[in-house]
Image 1 (tube, each protein chain N blue to C red):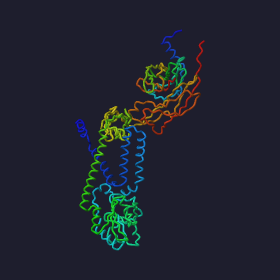
Image 2 (cartoon, one colour):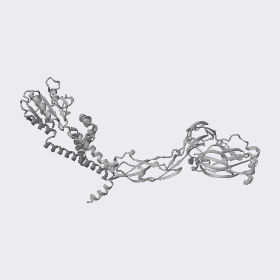
Image 3 (cartoon, each protein chain N blue to C red):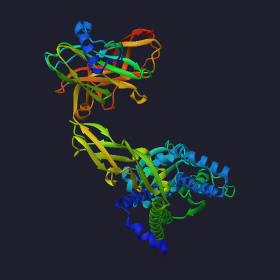
Image 4 (cartoon, rainbow over the protein chains, first blue to last red):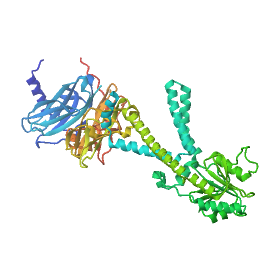
Length: 146
Length: 486
């Protein structure tokens, strides 16, 4: 059975609404505390992982081997007061590598961004999650190693 | 003519410091000659000078062992001179005041009162009182006189009669008269070993002859038996028949006769020649240094930044040292010591941010006679900033490879943030402070470790109470096995 992208997204949202993304008090990993820019937008979970399986992060970690080929930044928000845009900005050390624009839909939403790993990518990384007004919502840190 | 063609432009570059240099050293050399002439020290030093020349000739001819031996002797010469001639050196330095040492060239000697001495000698002769009077010339008598008693009394007829009066403890031995003073009494003179001396010469006359054979001193002996007065000088003896003859001998010795006035003129001429020779010798040495074959050398010199505004900090410099190409005579270039070369950049007018400076001659201090040919690189940029404090999150810089099947799921840092002091412009560009590289290879299970922070650039400092080390508490779990696809 083959899903279109729109169908996949709808299933993903439904699963989230059914409670797959329960609120967690602490975000695992080496993270800075959230700095809520919008009072009503809640961060549920932000984690770096090796894969997204069944619409959930798989093998969350803070150190990833270059051999896995890809690394994901999974972010779940609850509540999402209105349709809004956030950005996942990927930094290797203090250099911005890429910034991904993502859309959040109310009432709650989970989304992710990913990068393909190459040999020069080894080192400490961080992903800054910002809203459309460039307010910093969260920073998550990880490393790419051999 | 070609030589002079090069000489004139060269002389036009002579600085006033060079003239002072040559004159000062010439004067020191001349003073050395004045103070030590007539002593063995001067002769030995002249000998060492000869050895030095001989060593260079031997080196030029390829005489290896001779060169080596000469070099060894010369190396020890300074110690030998000080040890062997310590008395002469002490006499020169102690017996004269500082003025006499530094500029006492033509001080008129105090005249010896010949008439008073003659009167005393002839009264002693009439009374058959034996006496021995020594009038030193230019030669040093220190090594030849023994057992003398320091006296330093003004010469008078009565004083001399008193010294040589029988049963007086000072009547044995000789009295040494210098100028108008009796310097010492009871001095024992070396005896002559000559076999051709008259048979009537007793110990007193043999002692008088012994001293005048070895030095240019005048010795007057009064015979206790016959009352005869004998003057001895340069190994010869002259019997003095009357008081006028003795006055004449004394005046001749002390340079008061017309003939001796000529001798004094000659002496002055000698001094003048010595002064001229000193200047020429030192000028020649200076000339050989300055005019010698041009040698170029490149030296890496550290840059000193000075006069910085105390409110600012030197955050970064494009260079910490530069290569200076220096030129000068080979001797001067070889003699350069690193601490003699300074490269200073004045930051008194520098502003916050990046400042560019061009290194010129004005920034460089060099030893005299050494010229700056080139600076590489010539430009230096200096970044100044106001130091500020800011807090940053800390992140672990993991490296290596975790053992198979292990996943590092969490790493908590204690403290998670540190306060850093650094230039405001630098801190603006930093968002994270990283640890030093932490290897993963040895991690087998969850645990803790202490690691250092890696501050870059080096101008950053950790502010108290933050510490240079942070703790890492890490958690590892077994990697879940790959899902089996049915």
